[in-house]
Amino acid sequence: MKQRSNFIIDLSQGPILSQLVYFSFPLLLGNLFQQLYNSMDFLIVGRVCGSTAQAAVSASTSIVNLLISFTQGFAVGASIVISLHFGAKLYDQMRRSIHTAVVLGIGLGIISTTMGFVFSHSILTMIQTPPEALEEATEYFQIISIGLFFMVMYNIGSGIFRSLGDNRHPLYSLILSVILNTVLDLVLVAGLHMGVRGAAIATVIAQSASVTGEFWVLFRTDEFYHLNWNELKVDKKQLRAILKNAFPSAFQNCIISLSNVVVQANINQFGELAMAGFGSYSKLASFAVLPATSMSLSLTTFVSQNRGAKQYDRTKKGVHYGLILISAITMAIGLGMVVFGRPLVGLFNPDSAVIEYGIMMCQRAGPFLILLGLSHALTGALRGAGYAKIPLFVLALSWCLIRVLWILGLGLIWNDIRVVYWAYPVTWLCSTVILFVFYHKIYEAMESDESSTDSEAPSGNMSHLKHFISSLQHRS
Image (cartoon, rainbow, N blue to C red; front, side):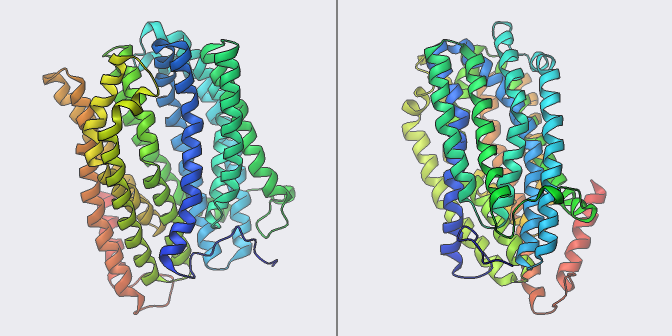
């Protein structure tokens, strides 16, 4: 095998804290640019075209995120399998899993694009998009759907790089994409006055550029992970392993996004100003949660690589460092949302009524952002440990079932938008408490079993724990 590139990081060796931070930082920057990329349409449309056009973008975004979130689960599943092979030094299996993931991504991308384009109007009508915004929302959604293929393939490519400890190549592709998207938004929306159509076209062109950059590297590099056209086929063993890890993550993401669609439908009932205000908060929150999502992905890779290398004590220490870091960061960000929420929300829309709706949510979510951060970090740690079904169960219960019941139940008593707003911190608390219980049981068993077995199959406490988790799944 050729000497490894400097872009590759073996997380099973070296100082834990510095490696975790070093690995997380490019991922955080990448997620930051991803959100800049996603927010440009919303910001420029709101400033140039007004609240109705911005409401159209907001309504479409919740559905697009649902489709993307489902396919992101497959990228996470592939990343876990590739990381395990990389950590265990099983490079032949690693290459087969990489090529299988690419073929899987192509299929998912085609399906996502087709579904989004065909069913856009029906879905937007179903979630009660206001009539004045429906036509623009449908046009925006249909054009964006063309780019869903590129979004899926970008996530697959990023998952491949991330599983090998390389977050910089996806970052470079994303920076190019953000710059291109911003320039095209300014030209098509502000310059040529093409409205939401121009914003959607700019997004699709930029998405195609980002995925082209990633796969140009994957095909042209002479590193051990390079793609080969002749190897682009499905390996059944690797596909089963990817799907085993992917489906829990995919359905978890899908369920969470589906609950957000229910939330969006309830917000829509309060009119386009409420839609624009909540949409402005959502864009701000998407930046606020970046450290948490970055740490979640980092811990998934860290735990997977170290689990493959059978370094369980190092695994637990890394998770502890991650939880401490994310707690401090999200507390600071949450405070900033409360103190500076008004000018931050105002960046997306200068309308005073829209700002009031946005700041109302900031004041309720900001103090509890630490709970969201801990839930994301614990989810990443459990996925990397091979227990992806646990976050699926917990987040489906907390962020979907309890959240929807809260909104629908209390909404019958108090027809107030604050009922919807409070659903978020309440369900963040539920998920954090339950995930901590599972985390403690799993990692305690992992630590006690480290000295009692050298085999791949868990024994002792870990075996009992697997039976316990299996019984929970059968009951549910």
